[in-house]
Length: 290
Image 1: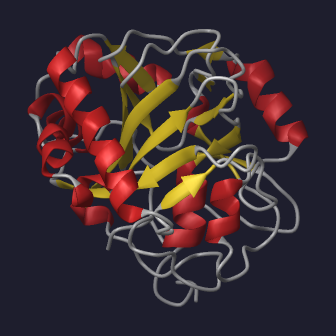
Image 2: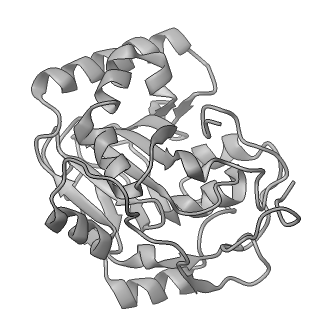
């Protein structure tokens, strides 16, 4: 089910031999004003990400954490709840904006969705939302990847006209598995080897290093040599805004302190999903809203 007959694929991936391509599309799209200054927008365009402290208040954090506890209890063994293979603790809960009115209201704020509209130059919708939980002593890692590579190959997202916002529900420290990102890596597209089989999405969500959609080690090393690696830390309530094509990863959490984040992806309305470019079937709506 690919779009070759109707839509040019500017970002070929899940191929026999990996390659690193230049990005074909802007990082910041013209046409929208918003809450950020020109300097802040330029900083995002250059690095592919920007951190801001104090986006959520203490009451917001308390409300989100309570909502996630309630949603997780209500869902039980629902496939939207992903658990750690190590001890069965909750790793991620997906589609949280559809499961909680309070979380949906936070996501709709100008300092969250408004920034996305400003950067993407378009109206936006939620492509995916989730809470990532890394409990102390047991939180697993997330291997190096570009989110856009997955969304392009498996969801049919035509171009990297999407932005992610990660809202910290706990402090993100150097010790509890905080995000690592390669500044500037958003300007390259790293293709991955191997076509994803149908119905693989559940296994990939449980694996820290899925066999599909992860770059070759040689490509990761090459990109790290060129762009370096920065670790993103911040207080509870801070926000990390990052381009969907940034290479990023996080280590496991063996500290006693949890690391939890509310994560939401905004896609431009004009960048609506097509059929998957390199997968046998669409992923479920809770992973890729259509």
